[in-house]
Each structure stands twice: as C-alpha cells, then as structure tokens.
Amino acid sequence: MVFLQRLVRLILVCAVMAGCAVKPVMDEPQQPMTASQELGGSPALSLLASAEQARQQGDSSRAERYLERALNIAPDSSWLYKELADLRLTEGDARGAEGFALKALRLAPDHPAYQAGLWELVATARERQGDAAGAKTARERAATLRDPESRKA
Image 1 (cartoon, rainbow, N blue to C red):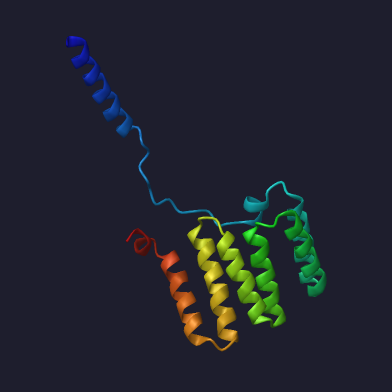
Image 2 (tube, helix red, strand yellow):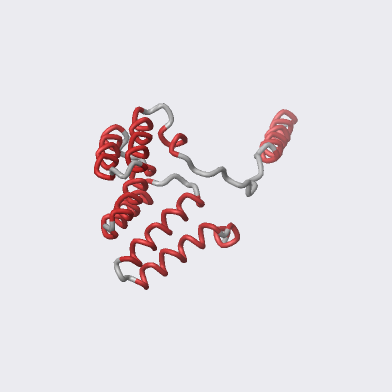
C-alpha cells in the first residue's frame, strides 16, 4: 500500500514537472519568407535565379520557361507558383495570375506574412479582371493574416 502511494505521488510529480517543461507559445515576429528557405539546396533555386535575371532583361517568355523547369524539379513549391503569378500579372494575364496565386496559397507554408502577400496578389489580379467584390474579400483575408490579434480569436 505504501509502495502504491509513493508510485502515485511520483507520477503526479512527473506530470506536474512535464507541464512546466512546455515552452510557452510566444508571438515572435517571423522572418520574411524567402525562396531559399523553401528551395534551399534544390537545383530549382538556380533556375529561379535564372528566371529573375531573364525577367530583369525583359525576356518574360524565357523567365517563364525557367520557372516551369523549376516546377518540374519542385512541383510543390509555393514560391515558384507565386513567381509565375507575378510574371503573369506583369504580362497582363490577370486570370492566369489569380490561378497561380491561389495554387501558391494551397501550397503555402504556415507563414502569415507570406500568405498575406499572396492574398494581395490575388486581390490585384481580381481587380484587373473587374471583380471588385472578390478583390475586397482577398484584401480582407490579407489584413486578417497581417493582424496577429485577429488570428488569436
């Protein structure tokens, strides 16, 4: 009987100490999301750099080819879809930009600032398609992601 009481006490002490060992959740500011975080070590990262260089030189079709090749290597890369969405928006293809941005959102990591930027991209694409209500909804989602207080609720 004494052994059983000591065992129960030991279990209770262990349970209390285990509860104290949990690191509290803190709202630490997140670092900006970067391509190298998502694609680090992948050959897709060098293709992304080549796409950016082609884009800066005004060769959007070559940039798109590099991005598509990169997607063959890293098909689940939210960042690559975001870059394609940006490229399509620059080319005036708002519908294509929205599609790529939504795909990027489906693959996006749990990074609220990054996701908010994607929703802004969706909003811009919808605006250019004449969808004011859809753009407003997308901007509201972006604002919710940027406001840490609204995410706690």
